[in-house]
Image 1 (cartoon, rainbow, N blue to C red):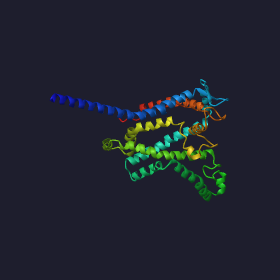
Image 2: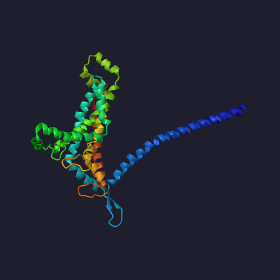
Image 3: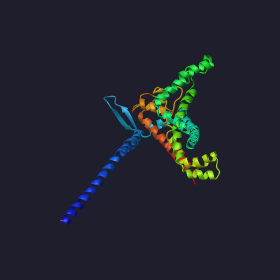
Amino acid sequence: MSKNKFTVAEGFKKDTILSRSKKRLIFYILMFALPLLQFALFYIYVNVNTITLAFTRYDQNLEGLGYTVHFVGFENISKAWRFFSSSGPMIMSSLKLYICNLVIVMGLALIFSYYIAKKFMLAGFFRVVLYLPHVVSSVVLVLLYKYIVGDVFAIVGKKLFGEEFMEANGLSEGLLGGNASASVKYGVVLFYNLWIGFGANVMLFTGSMSSIDQSIIESAWLDGVNIVQEFIHIYIPMIFPTFTTFVVTGITGIFANQMNMYTFFGTAGLADFDVFGYYLYRNTVKGDVYSKTAKGLSYPEIAALGVIITLILVPITLLVRKLMETYGPRTD
């Protein structure tokens, strides 16, 4: 009798263990199902479809509906390369944004992050103020910014400098008005992007600096280092991996960054200047699988352009990361 009871209890225990294992397996499957589905759909499928699209052409059927698909080899690649090689001004506008972000925004963000991490005077106030723009919608910020550089600037400028001066310099309608020069408009949009990206960089750098072990800093104090030496020889090497990540990810987004110009100007764009990412976005929104106009790009040509940009940026990105990891400051 006791043997039977033991057997039943042992069998119940085994069933319980199997039941728990099944529940855990189901839990793991459900946990990984959505991320894997998203990866397969939005990364693998999108990239495979883009590469396939880069080597095909869609011809609209004259009789009936639909398209006829043709494999065209490197025809789209050739067209996309001709477009890319003739897009010097747009490429330069995108490169200027990246360089200004790297030199001005990153440099100031490192200094402000150090100030906040050291908890100097009003450090908490600066932390809140710098993060506030990221709480408000970008559309609201752009509307407010356009109002300031437009109507407000025009009214104040006329009162301070006179209408003749403002009209002579093309500023009577503001910094983004129709009479303003292309360089002025680009500078206004560039300043907004630098300002809006400053707070995020400060927050991330501050988080990295705050995680530095205080015993290392105290040891440096005992060795007699000053604030500048502490910043250069301790803080910079300790957060250099974070800085490297910013530089590398910035390179990958050079030709995709549209400088918030869609929020400023919609799909109409500007005749004065253009940015590569903004141009691609407008063509994607207005485009189709075949070219509707001589100036626009079709989806296969845009896909081919994406392949070209990838082939250009991938080796540059890997090289920059390797150089920064090899020759960058070390913690040892």
